[in-house]
Length: 532
Image 1: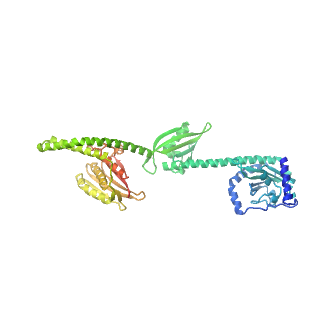
Image 2: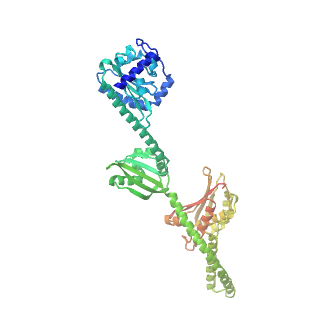
Image 3: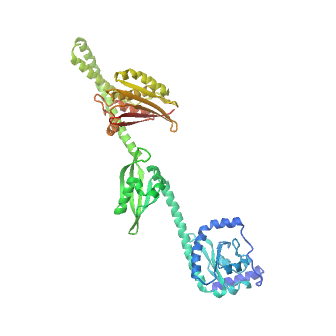
């Protein structure tokens, strides 16, 4: 109370000596905000005003029967919110106490708002504590409130009533309410900051993230999860984790057992295509003390990793085979050439000897194998030129037509009407086409049709060549092993042609995909970049 008396006495002296005020005059709040400035401040303080209103309206309920007006100002004393008893509202309207007006000692004299802002303490002015006599019937209580995190002053909250309802209890009640308001504002700011950090972390990570409550209801499903699985967040939120198949199964297991899942690897089929992806998932139970409140799952796409791993293994195998074959082939080829030459001389003198025919045939087969070994062991050197694939395919088909008639096969070509210009090694690419067309012939021992399609994908700057037969087809396991040295589905095959073809296409920065169904036929898709 001693401080109150000092603050009030000093303020009244200022009003009399410095501002030359007359206590018999009626004060008026002269300084105000424009409509635009008021709207700006209301938007700036919107969250704070909502919190203040929430708690102060509760306080008014506790003061039932007491006419009360609540006024909220910013840290400069500008009124941003005013509500409560209409009778008191009518009284203060005559003093200019309205939205956008400012409590300033030089305009309104000794007042609780200015004193609370100046001394940053709760202040009570009752009756004659006011400088102006017309306010002697009012009791005003004001308390400043701050951001607890940094201590910066936000503004004031005030209670105004009539002097006959004055009580020191009101200032204590107001101070308690302001303490609660400060804690709530701080908590909301912390929650807002944490929410922003959480969103940044969740949305910036390449990991797919799913969070659920204890019942398995999805709470979070980030953009990476959408991209990996190909399902939108809204679909998962609306339909539940059952929509995300095996991921949902792992989450349900964790929710049921309370045990975490680490580094579980599995495959999922994509909804929009026939492709699949390999995923690695971790699922953790979420606890609040000893009570499980939900589950957190994170998963990553391992498909490219497995593909690269498989390519690395194949590359290492081919490298080892290449080194071995090159040395071995050179060692074998020299004596082999001598044996073939001597066998030819023996045939001239024993032309009816059928065994020499068999020996010569087998030696030629060995020579062919050695030559393919040497070819595989050497780096693929590409001599690129501009080439029109329509013309190259037509030339190749014309070359293969005589062989096609021997196999009772008809070749059909569906050329492309769009850009088919590529930058390739013509002779090596023709070698690839001949190999795949020949394989198509041999896959149809009773004859049939071979269709060659040519399509341009201008969006991806790619050109697609498809060689399709009606042959015996292959199993999924056989298709998987294509391109592996020595693997062949033909009785007399060496298993060296396709690895060379794959190597040639890869050296053109292209790719080969084989689709085959046992008993129905095979499609070989060759994809090349346009104008690479």
